[in-house]
Length: 210
Image 1 (cartoon, rainbow, N blue to C red):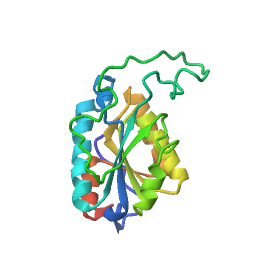
Image 2 (cartoon, helix red, strand yellow):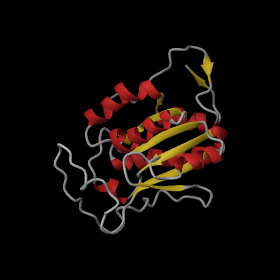
Image 3 (tube, rainbow, N blue to C red):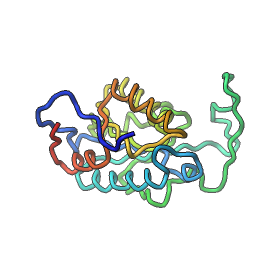
Image 4 (tube, helix red, strand yellow):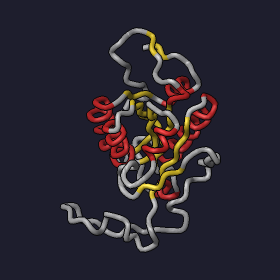
């Protein structure tokens, strides 16, 4: 996939987002991602780009929200092993720190950390409450995995009425094909797709030229 963003049809100068009404929602930048397959961008690249986005969001006055997946020690609050599906599922291997945010992600006291127990970070959490209490109307999505945590959360955000911006090169999936399907077929239907450079500029208050 090209590193270039998909540009809007409108050729006029536009504002991609208003930083003070925007939240950067970071999906699952936790220990587990460093042991997962990640394409077309490896986990270290995604972590590095998300770090850039965090710095820009803080500088521009946007809200930063961290989402991480975690369960009870026996995972009795996980759907993975209790729902019957056509794909055989096995209990994943866990290790100390699999569900902790990576070292590069250090939330400030004013930055919410949401725990999710499914692909959709809105379900069973206070994510929507945090967004609404902070006056957010636009959500910038990034993280791993593109077609699970990012897409699952983004679909719910769309249903809740939020504007969406997807940072294509600051997310990854298990395969390039899975990533590209979400980016090409799903995300354009519910939001706008840009690269890290474009979103960093927008978070810092730079107008985008279509």
